[in-house]
Amino acid sequence: MRIVRAKDYEDMSRKAAAIIAAQVTLKPDCVLGLATGSTPIGTYKNLVAAYEAGDLDFSQVKTYNLDEYRGLPGDHDQSYRYFMNVNLFDHVNIDKANTHVPDGLMEDYEAACAEYDEAVAAAGHQDLQLLGIGNNGHIGFNEPCDSFIKGTHCVDLTESTIQANSRLFDSIDDVPRQAYTMGIGTIMGAKSILVVANGDAKAQAVHDMCYGPIVPSCPASILQLHPNVVVVADEAALALC
Ligand code: GLP
Image (cartoon, rainbow, N blue to C red; front, side):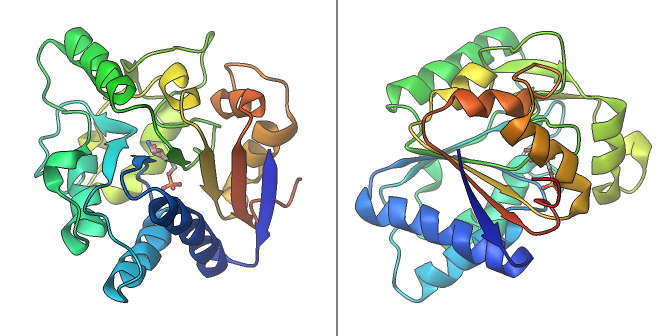
């Protein structure tokens, strides 16, 4: 696991975007695993700026997002599909047909989750998987639990995640209680992984991800077993490292 220290959020975002930009430049038809949350917004802004400057071409890029709230349609302003459109896809020359976010309204969700994993595998797996990290060490929506769940699945969100994400909804009652997420196996199937983290609320989770025991009570700790992980984090998030 390589740790890159960034001065602040802007520095983290620039450094993370440079890694993604290098991937897209080196392999124009790459598969990117993408993430939502507040942390990667600056990274996406930098990618949009690089595209607008003529430095990046997304026309052949395929993307698979980590997760989606169960029950939210893609046009809901808190859905992760909406987030991706607004923060990245609407501003670059990516073919929307090449962008994939789990469907929050899937009916036969077990079959649909299995199909999502099959699609990621058929695309050749993620060349680069971008991840944020939850305050409780979750990645995607893989919450702390008793075992690492391999494939894409439906999860019950923990109180701490519902609380943390309620800042983006009108009221905590509006936060969906369940979500679909790539499993740990789907994430670990990526050829390389880029984790972004900022702020002191992430310090314990970042420490446990990098140096704690590899246990499902801190899902991000599994990343210690991946051969190609880079963590780009600011000083506050690295305070305990
Ligand atoms: C959400 C997402 C994660 C994200 C995490 C942290 O629950 N499912 O993919 O990494 O929370 O979010 P933020 O970057 O807003 O702190």
